[in-house]
Amino acid sequence: MNIVLLGAPGAGKGTQAQRLVADYGVAHISTGDLLRAAVKARSELGVQAKVYMDAGQLVPDRLVIGLVKERLGQDDARRGFILDGFPRNTDQAVALDAALEAAGVALDVALLVDVAPQVIVDRLSSRRTCRDCGYTAGAAADACPRCGGEMYQRDDDRPETIKRRLDVYQGQTAPLAQYYDERGMLRRVDGDRPADEVYADVKELLSL
Ligand code: ADP
Ligand code: ZN
Image 1: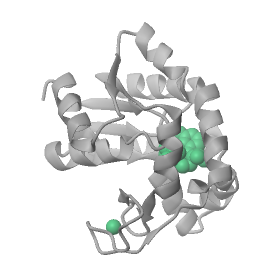
Image 2: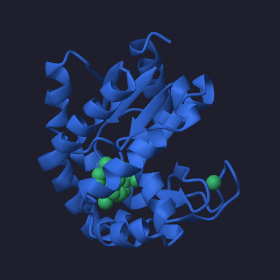
Image 3: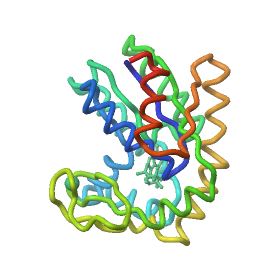
Protein backbone atom coordinates (compact mmCIF):
# COMPACT_ATOMS: atom_id res chain seq x y z
CA MET A 1 0.00 0.00 0.00
CA ASN A 2 1.35 3.38 -1.06
CA ILE A 3 -0.39 6.30 0.55
CA VAL A 4 -0.23 10.07 0.57
CA LEU A 5 -1.61 11.58 3.78
CA LEU A 6 -3.08 15.05 3.39
CA GLY A 7 -4.33 17.37 6.10
CA ALA A 8 -3.58 20.59 7.94
CA PRO A 9 -0.75 20.78 10.46
CA GLY A 10 -2.07 19.16 13.63
CA ALA A 11 -4.81 17.21 11.82
CA GLY A 12 -3.32 14.01 13.20
CA LYS A 13 -1.53 12.72 10.11
CA GLY A 14 1.53 11.65 12.09
CA THR A 15 -0.55 9.72 14.63
CA GLN A 16 -2.44 7.83 11.95
CA ALA A 17 0.78 7.15 10.06
CA GLN A 18 2.48 5.75 13.17
CA ARG A 19 -0.40 3.32 13.68
CA LEU A 20 -0.37 2.11 10.10
CA VAL A 21 3.37 1.61 10.30
CA ALA A 22 3.08 -0.37 13.55
CA ASP A 23 0.29 -2.59 12.18
CA TYR A 24 1.36 -3.07 8.56
CA GLY A 25 5.12 -2.53 8.45
CA VAL A 26 5.07 0.13 5.76
CA ALA A 27 7.69 2.89 5.70
CA HIS A 28 6.71 6.19 7.32
CA ILE A 29 8.15 9.01 5.25
CA SER A 30 7.55 12.27 7.09
CA THR A 31 9.28 15.22 5.49
CA GLY A 32 8.89 17.17 8.75
CA ASP A 33 10.78 14.42 10.63
CA LEU A 34 13.41 14.15 7.89
CA LEU A 35 13.92 17.91 7.94
CA ARG A 36 14.08 18.10 11.75
CA ALA A 37 16.68 15.31 11.71
CA ALA A 38 18.72 17.32 9.18
CA VAL A 39 18.44 20.41 11.39
CA LYS A 40 19.56 18.45 14.44
CA ALA A 41 22.52 16.99 12.52
CA ARG A 42 23.40 20.51 11.30
CA SER A 43 23.81 19.25 7.75
CA GLU A 44 23.94 21.86 5.02
CA LEU A 45 20.36 21.04 4.06
CA GLY A 46 19.33 21.32 7.70
CA VAL A 47 20.91 24.73 8.10
CA GLN A 48 19.12 25.98 5.00
CA ALA A 49 15.79 24.43 5.95
CA LYS A 50 15.70 25.72 9.53
CA VAL A 51 15.13 29.34 8.54
CA TYR A 52 11.95 28.43 6.64
CA MET A 53 10.69 25.98 9.25
CA ASP A 54 11.06 28.45 12.12
CA ALA A 55 9.11 30.99 10.09
CA GLY A 56 6.32 28.50 9.36
CA GLN A 57 7.03 28.63 5.64
CA LEU A 58 7.63 25.82 3.17
CA VAL A 59 11.20 24.71 2.69
CA PRO A 60 12.11 25.21 -1.01
CA ASP A 61 11.02 22.38 -3.30
CA ARG A 62 14.54 21.69 -4.59
CA LEU A 63 15.61 20.70 -1.05
CA VAL A 64 12.54 18.69 -0.10
CA ILE A 65 12.00 16.81 -3.37
CA GLY A 66 15.56 15.46 -3.35
CA LEU A 67 15.15 14.31 0.24
CA VAL A 68 11.94 12.42 -0.56
CA LYS A 69 13.33 10.76 -3.69
CA GLU A 70 16.32 9.52 -1.75
CA ARG A 71 14.11 8.16 1.02
CA LEU A 72 11.72 6.47 -1.44
CA GLY A 73 14.70 4.70 -2.95
CA GLN A 74 15.57 2.94 0.30
CA ASP A 75 14.76 -0.75 0.67
CA ASP A 76 12.01 -0.56 3.27
CA ALA A 77 9.87 1.67 1.03
CA ARG A 78 9.39 -1.26 -1.35
CA ARG A 79 6.97 -2.90 1.07
CA GLY A 80 4.82 0.21 0.85
CA PHE A 81 5.03 3.73 2.20
CA ILE A 82 3.05 6.48 3.83
CA LEU A 83 4.02 9.96 2.77
CA ASP A 84 3.25 12.34 5.63
CA GLY A 85 3.70 16.05 4.94
CA PHE A 86 4.60 15.55 1.29
CA PRO A 87 3.50 16.69 -1.25
CA ARG A 88 2.62 20.11 0.11
CA ASN A 89 2.07 22.02 -3.11
CA THR A 90 1.23 21.16 -6.72
CA ASP A 91 4.83 21.23 -7.94
CA GLN A 92 5.74 18.63 -5.32
CA ALA A 93 2.77 16.48 -6.35
CA VAL A 94 3.86 16.62 -9.99
CA ALA A 95 7.45 15.75 -9.02
CA LEU A 96 6.18 12.82 -6.95
CA ASP A 97 4.09 11.48 -9.83
CA ALA A 98 7.12 11.65 -12.11
CA ALA A 99 9.44 9.95 -9.61
CA LEU A 100 6.96 7.14 -8.93
CA GLU A 101 6.27 6.62 -12.60
CA ALA A 102 9.99 6.38 -13.32
CA ALA A 103 10.27 3.77 -10.56
CA GLY A 104 7.23 1.83 -11.82
CA VAL A 105 5.36 2.38 -8.57
CA ALA A 106 1.72 3.51 -8.23
CA LEU A 107 0.01 5.47 -5.49
CA ASP A 108 -3.06 3.74 -4.10
CA VAL A 109 -4.79 6.57 -2.35
CA ALA A 110 -4.52 10.14 -1.07
CA LEU A 111 -6.14 10.24 2.35
CA LEU A 112 -7.30 13.62 3.63
CA VAL A 113 -7.58 13.91 7.42
CA ASP A 114 -10.14 16.67 7.68
CA VAL A 115 -10.20 18.98 10.74
CA ALA A 116 -11.66 22.45 11.36
CA PRO A 117 -9.09 25.28 11.74
CA GLN A 118 -10.03 26.20 15.34
CA VAL A 119 -9.44 22.63 16.49
CA ILE A 120 -6.02 22.82 14.86
CA VAL A 121 -4.92 25.95 16.70
CA ASP A 122 -5.87 24.41 20.07
CA ARG A 123 -4.17 21.12 19.30
CA LEU A 124 -0.93 22.61 18.06
CA SER A 125 -0.60 25.09 20.93
CA SER A 126 -0.70 22.26 23.47
CA ARG A 127 1.26 19.73 21.43
CA ARG A 128 4.58 18.34 22.64
CA THR A 129 6.97 16.35 20.46
CA CYS A 130 9.67 13.82 21.43
CA ARG A 131 13.17 15.11 20.70
CA ASP A 132 14.41 11.61 19.95
CA CYS A 133 11.69 9.75 18.06
CA GLY A 134 9.22 12.43 16.95
CA TYR A 135 6.25 10.98 18.85
CA THR A 136 3.59 13.64 19.54
CA ALA A 137 1.28 14.01 22.55
CA GLY A 138 -0.78 16.59 24.44
CA ALA A 139 0.86 18.92 26.98
CA ALA A 140 0.58 16.52 29.94
CA ALA A 141 3.42 14.14 29.02
CA ASP A 142 6.98 15.08 30.09
CA ALA A 143 8.66 11.85 29.01
CA CYS A 144 7.99 10.17 25.67
CA PRO A 145 5.62 7.22 26.21
CA ARG A 146 7.30 5.41 23.34
CA CYS A 147 11.05 5.86 23.98
CA GLY A 148 11.40 7.87 27.21
CA GLY A 149 12.94 10.83 25.37
CA GLU A 150 12.37 14.46 26.29
CA MET A 151 9.08 16.01 25.14
CA TYR A 152 9.43 19.62 23.98
CA GLN A 153 7.39 22.28 22.22
CA ARG A 154 8.50 22.66 18.62
CA ASP A 155 9.54 26.22 17.76
CA ASP A 156 6.89 26.24 15.06
CA ASP A 157 4.12 25.16 17.47
CA ARG A 158 4.04 28.66 18.99
CA PRO A 159 0.94 30.79 18.31
CA GLU A 160 2.51 33.31 15.88
CA THR A 161 3.93 30.55 13.71
CA ILE A 162 0.81 28.36 13.84
CA LYS A 163 -1.19 31.06 12.07
CA ARG A 164 1.41 31.29 9.30
CA ARG A 165 1.46 27.51 8.83
CA LEU A 166 -2.33 27.42 8.55
CA ASP A 167 -2.23 30.18 5.93
CA VAL A 168 0.39 28.27 3.98
CA TYR A 169 -1.75 25.15 4.23
CA GLN A 170 -4.88 26.91 2.97
CA GLY A 171 -3.07 28.62 0.12
CA GLN A 172 -0.72 25.91 -1.11
CA THR A 173 -1.56 22.49 0.31
CA ALA A 174 -5.37 22.38 0.52
CA PRO A 175 -5.65 22.63 -3.32
CA LEU A 176 -3.98 19.21 -3.51
CA ALA A 177 -7.27 17.64 -2.44
CA GLN A 178 -8.62 18.67 -5.83
CA TYR A 179 -5.47 17.46 -7.59
CA TYR A 180 -5.99 13.93 -6.23
CA ASP A 181 -9.76 14.07 -6.53
CA GLU A 182 -9.44 14.73 -10.26
CA ARG A 183 -7.31 11.60 -10.48
CA GLY A 184 -9.94 9.56 -8.61
CA MET A 185 -7.60 8.98 -5.66
CA LEU A 186 -8.95 11.18 -2.88
CA ARG A 187 -10.58 9.74 0.25
CA ARG A 188 -11.57 11.78 3.32
CA VAL A 189 -11.82 10.93 7.00
CA ASP A 190 -13.25 13.20 9.69
CA GLY A 191 -10.20 13.91 11.87
CA ASP A 192 -12.10 15.84 14.54
CA ARG A 193 -12.59 12.77 16.75
CA PRO A 194 -10.48 10.59 19.05
CA ALA A 195 -7.50 9.04 17.25
CA ASP A 196 -8.86 5.49 17.69
CA GLU A 197 -12.09 6.34 15.90
CA VAL A 198 -10.24 8.06 13.09
CA TYR A 199 -8.00 5.03 12.74
CA ALA A 200 -11.00 2.68 12.51
CA ASP A 201 -12.25 4.75 9.56
CA VAL A 202 -8.82 4.82 7.98
CA LYS A 203 -8.58 1.05 8.06
CA GLU A 204 -12.06 0.69 6.61
CA LEU A 205 -11.28 3.12 3.80
CA LEU A 206 -8.09 1.28 2.98
CA SER A 207 -9.95 -2.07 3.22
CA LEU A 208 -7.50 -3.33 5.84
P1 ADP B 1 3.07 20.08 10.43
O1 ADP B 1 2.36 19.15 9.49
O2 ADP B 1 2.61 19.92 11.83
O3 ADP B 1 3.17 21.49 9.96
P2 ADP B 1 5.61 18.96 9.63
O4 ADP B 1 6.47 18.26 10.62
O5 ADP B 1 4.98 18.19 8.55
O6 ADP B 1 4.55 19.67 10.53
O7 ADP B 1 6.41 20.19 8.96
C1 ADP B 1 7.11 21.14 9.71
C2 ADP B 1 7.77 22.14 8.78
O8 ADP B 1 8.71 21.47 7.93
C3 ADP B 1 6.83 22.87 7.81
O9 ADP B 1 6.22 23.99 8.39
C4 ADP B 1 7.79 23.24 6.67
O10 ADP B 1 8.59 24.35 7.01
C5 ADP B 1 8.70 22.02 6.61
N1 ADP B 1 8.21 21.01 5.65
C6 ADP B 1 7.76 19.75 5.96
N2 ADP B 1 7.37 19.11 4.84
C7 ADP B 1 7.60 19.96 3.81
C8 ADP B 1 7.39 19.90 2.39
N3 ADP B 1 6.87 18.79 1.81
N4 ADP B 1 7.72 20.98 1.65
C9 ADP B 1 8.23 22.08 2.21
N5 ADP B 1 8.44 22.22 3.53
C10 ADP B 1 8.13 21.18 4.32
ZN1 ZN C 1 10.32 9.26 21.80
